[in-house]
Amino acid sequence: MNTPRARAMLFMGRRSHQSHAPHKHSPPAVANDLVISTVDENSGIAMLTMNRPPANSLSLEMNEALCYSLKTVEANPKIQSVILSSTNPKIFSAGLDITELVAPDNDRLPRFWNSLQQVYIDLYGSRLATVAAIQGHAPAAGCFLAMSCDYRVMSEGDTNNDIKKKHVPTIGLNETQLGIAAPPWMGQLLVRTIGFRQAELALALGTLFPPEQALSIGLVDDIVPHQQVESGDHKLVDLLPSQIKDQAQNSLLQKAYTQAQIYAKIPPQARVASKMVTREEHIFRMIAKRDEDTQHFCGFVTQKAVQKNLTAYVEALKNKSAKK
Ligand SMILES: CCCCCCCC/C=C\C=C\CC(=O)SCCNC(=O)CCNC(=O)[C@H](O)C(C)(C)COP(=O)(O)OP(=O)(O)OC[C@H]1O[C@@H](n2cnc3c(N)ncnc32)[C@H](O)[C@@H]1OP(=O)(O)O
Image 1 (cartoon, rainbow, N blue to C red):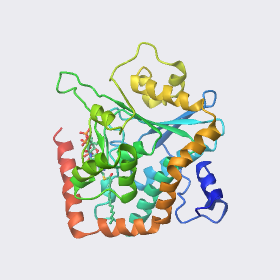
Image 2: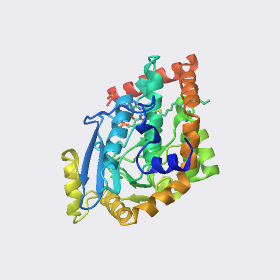
Image 3: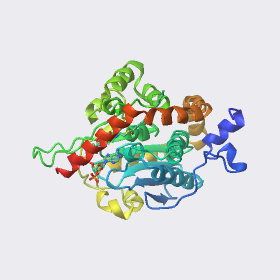
């Protein structure tokens, strides 16, 4: 698998195993509205908007929809950049769908984990320039999605004095707070993004960072105030799915679009080759340990003590939501 040809194919949007019989890890082709895909061939920019209410949490089907949408966009040679966003103005993604982990089905659990691994392989190894527009919370695997992109722009949130309107999004790998540990490849992604010591601290404490702190440690590349801008780029307006058309003047999406334009102007072969330099080793290391990782995950999650923590966590989430 780890041959020069396999490496090149990974980053050119094709998988070396696709020419053979379906691989056990290949996500099935799915088409649904969990991820809304819009494409503008003139600018070379596409947008994938996560649309799984209430929290864009990552279920098996959501992971498959993400991979399918990304592959479909990648197959269009006119597209060079993609923006990953959310229809929910307050949540980018709440991470893994925790209900997948509680009292799991023996057959579904490994398939679920494989689908998440595939999201990582496809997104981190995409030939496209990927820009995450993080308008709301991005805990755990939500943070992982953002870290798998090439560039992260985060909204400062609504720091309105009115406490009811106030909304400050946070981002980070908070798994330890749930009594679980981030999988090794996800934790390593944090190390690669913010450096060893900051990652060591953040992983142990399960820290969720507000936008300014996330910027200061390099977890995001830019933050933008929560505001409408005077004149939006009309090309961005064309790209927005109907569900978020009213956000055309939104400064976060404007910034993400500008960054996607900058990437789209770089000669693609050179951009892709430079991405391989920093990412291929990490991806191939994960692929080599993929089955072992799935076994660890299934063994870990099904432990009695872990199930107890997760059950209590889901209960607390539901109670919190019911009290609103
Ligand atoms: C030896 C090696 C071993 C290796 C082992 C590896 C093991 C690794 C295992 C797991 C890795 C996990 C990574 C993860 O991603 S775990 C998920 C972590 N996510 C969270 O902790 C986030 C939880 N959610 C929240 O904190 C909030 O919902 C927030 C995102 C901040 C939004 O807050 P708010 O706007 O106030 O919204 P609500 O809390 O009211 O939620 C709205 C509804 O959404 C449901 N919800 C929220 N998050 C999830 C989720 N992650 N999964 C499923 N459902 C979720 C919530 O219950 C509300 O629903 P309802 O209104 O129907 O009750």
